[in-house]
Amino acid sequence: MPDAIIPQSEDYRRRKGLESDLADLIERVKRLEAARPPPPQDDPLLTQEQAASALGLKPPTLAMWRHQKKGPAYVKIGRSAFYRQSALTAWLEAQSVIPQFEGDK
Image 1 (cartoon, rainbow, N blue to C red):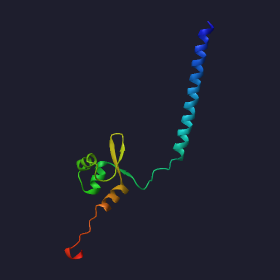
Image 2 (image 1 turned 30 degrees about the vertical axis):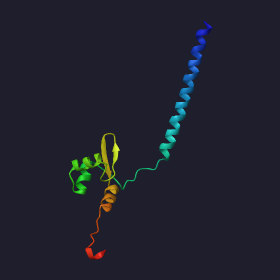
Image 3 (image 1 turned 90 degrees about the horizontal axis):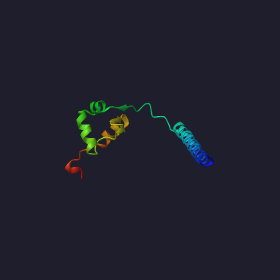
Image 4 (image 1 turned 180 degrees about the horizontal axis):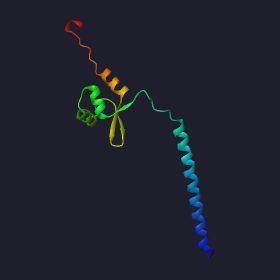
C-alpha cells in the first residue's frame, strides 16, 4: 500500500512544479505585453480593397504581387493581408522615376 502513495506524491509534485512554471510564464508574457509600445494610431491598417483603391489598382493585382513577392509591404493577420498607409506611401516613393534626356548624361 505505501508503494501506491509514493507515485501519487511524485506525480503531485511534478504537477505542482508544472503549474508553478506555467504561472511564471504567464507573468512573464504579461510583463512583455505591457512593455510593448502601442501601435501607431495615425498609421491605420488598410484592407486589400482599400489599398488597391488608394494605389489605383484592382485587388487581385495586389494578391498577385504578394504571391510574386513584390509590391508594397503588408501585414499578415491570419489569412488576411493588410497594408499600412505609410508602407503604401514609401512604396510609391520608391517607384518614382526621374526621366533623363540623352543630353543629361
